[in-house]
Length: 334
Ligand SMILES: Nc1ncnc2c1ncn2[C@@H]1O[C@H](COP(=O)(O)OP(=O)(O)O)[C@@H](O)[C@H]1O
Image 1 (cartoon, rainbow, N blue to C red):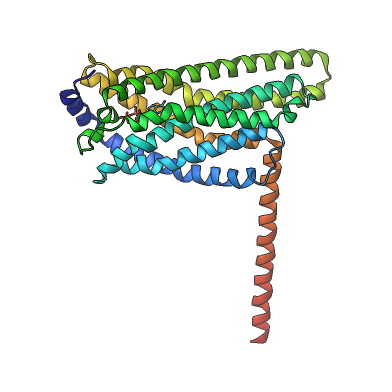
Image 2: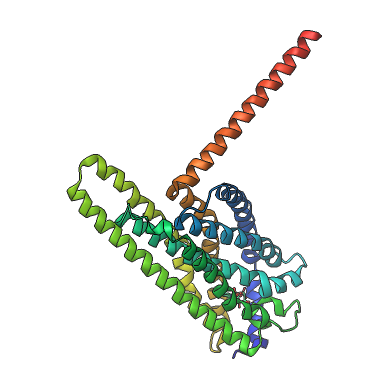
C-alpha cells in the first residue's frame, strides 16, 4: 500500500489547482441546473405513463438513477470548490461519491437492457412476450439496484479514517487497508460490467443493422425509410455510450492503481487524477444525454411530453386572453 504521507502531500498540492477548484465546480453547476430541469421533466412525464412494457420499466429506472446522480453534484461542487467546507469533501468521499458511481453503473446496465429490448423489438416486432413479462422486468430491475448497492456499501463503511483538511484531499487516504482493497475490487468489477454491457450494445447494434439490411433488400422503398429510423435510434444509445463512458473506463484502471499501489510518481498521479476527473465529467454528462434517448426512442414519452406542452400553452393563452379581457374592461370603465 502507498505511503500516504509524502505521496498524499505532493498529490494534494497538485490537486488544489484552479482547474479543480473553479473549472469543474462551474461545469458541474451548469450540469446540475440543466440535468435537474431535464430529468425533473422526464420524471413528471414518466410517472404519468403506465409501466406497460419492459422498455418503459427500464426507462423509468434510468431516469430515477440519473436524478439520484444529479443530486450528488452539489456535494462535489462545494467539496471541490474549497470554500472552507472541507468536511463536505469528506462526506462526498464517504457517501455522495459512492452514490454517484453506484447510479452511474445502474444507468450503464439499464442502457444495456434498453438496447437488448430494442433489438428484440426490431427482430420480432410483433412478439408480445416482451410486454407480458412485466413482473420479471420489475424483479430484474430491483435485483440490479440491490446487487449494485451491496457492492458499493463497503466503500462507504470502509472510508473510516479520521477527517482532516489534509486527508480529505484524496478519498483513498480516508480508507482502511481493506477499504483500499475493496475499492480496487469494486473498480475491476465495474470495469467488467461496463465492457460486457458495451459488447452487448455493439453486438445488438450489428445484429439490428444486419436485420435492417436484409429487410432493405426485401422491402419496398417507403418501408425501408421507416425502418431506417429505428437504426438511427439505436445509434443514439451507442453514441451516448461512446461519448459518456468509454473515455472514463480507459482512464480509470491506471488511476485506481495509482490510488492503491506504490511506484507512481507524484506527477503521474497528478496527471491521472486530471484525466480521470475530465473523463468522469463526460460520464456525468450522461445524466443530461439520457433524456434525449427517452425522447427519440420512446413514442409514449414523446407524445405525453408534447401533450403536456400543448396543454400548458393552451392554458397560458387562455390566461393571456383573460388578462387582456380584464384590462380592456377596466379601461372601458375609466
Ligand atoms: N465504481 C465504484 N463503485 C462504487 N464506489 C466507488 C467506485 N469507484 C470509486 N468509488 C468510491 O467513491 C469514492 C470516491 O472515489 P474516487 O473518485 O476514486 O476518489 P478521488 O475523488 O479521491 O479521486 C471512494 O469512496 C471510492 O471508494
